[in-house]
Amino acid sequence: MDRSTDIELRLLIEAIYLKYSYDFRDYSGASVKRRVQHALRQLDCATISALQERVLHDPAAFMQLLQFLTIPVSEMFRDPGHFLAIRQEVVPLLKTYPSIKIWIAGCSTGEEVYSMAILLREEGLLERTIIYATDINPHSLDKAKQGIFTLDSVRTYADNYRASGGKRDFTEYYNSAYGYAIFDKTLRDNVTFADHSLATDSVFSETQLISCRNVLIYFNKNLQDRAFSLFHESLCHRGFLVLGSKETLDFSAYGKRFEALVKQERIYRKS
Image (tube, rainbow, N blue to C red):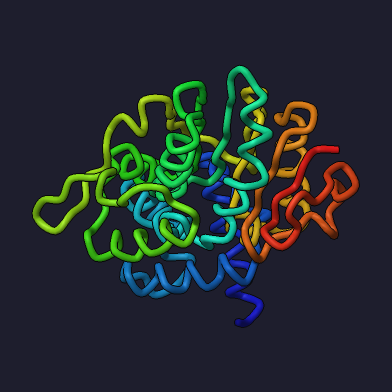
């Protein structure tokens, strides 16, 4: 990519921040470039400058671009060993709290939210838990609130669920119709879905557990440290932080403020 294109990209990201207050300035440069180039083809723009002009004058075009900048890639009980470790190592400690608050940061289209709700229900904790599910993409949040997923994808979720220590038949959690699985709405009775940016927003509650999986890989180091700062501030004494399989606290400014509970599954505890 030549220098002119790099400049165009920086101007686009700055324009988005100034116009819409979405801050992608500290996202991984390579990831943003790849996503913007894909958006150019889909939105029929010859250059990044043309795309910038369009999104500045057309909020609907910006919402289209946002779908490319925040590509939701998720599945229920993703990395089953991770959820098994939460059941075995974290749940017994969560049971010692009279009430529990969990923050799922970057919840995307809700797969992680429903996975956590199902796990908590099976462990007898859902009724005394509030789950905050946050994301910067309003379309993803709307989909998460609906709790409707394709039956094809749910077959994969069922395999993950069994491997993660699931205690029931997965079909008990949804009704199927017209090729879709509609998940039990009582799973989200204690869920608050909200718009929240790790790049620009602050802490909103004290929590016992924060799950932020496969989000930080798209941030540069400065933004990762900002996110870790928010998590550290939000977590109660000895609270839990869970990250994605390719994410770590090891090289962060906050590395020494957490200790590994199950290092292989990226489950940490506030020191």
